[in-house]
Image (cartoon, rainbow, N blue to C red; front, side, top):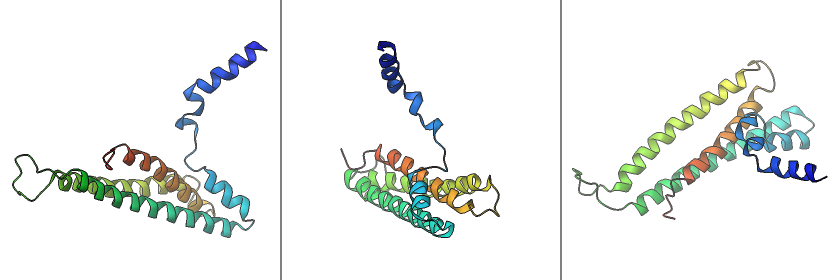
Length: 152
């Protein structure tokens, strides 16, 4: 009995048991809920599409808030800058916005690739893409929060 308890405790402490590499990019609670709550495949796909759109809009809002916070919390002048009105926040936010444009293109192309692995003519092509976008948005939101643009 002690061995079983010890084994269970150790398994919960092993990070690889729950690591990202065990997750599937086209799986998630959103897909599960949409398929469970809609017997019709078309309705389930519409449900997932709506969740993907909301996830993308939430990402756009997070980016906009982050840009505002970057500018507010980095108001100092640029060292040896040519424009005395330009702040560190201006420079940082421009680089940040450029990176987000590139990331959105990556998200689009990556998820199209993921969805195409089952063939473009199948009815599940777009739901795979929607869940992929939701999953990438979740992970990317965590990355954005790591820069602590809110000053905390």
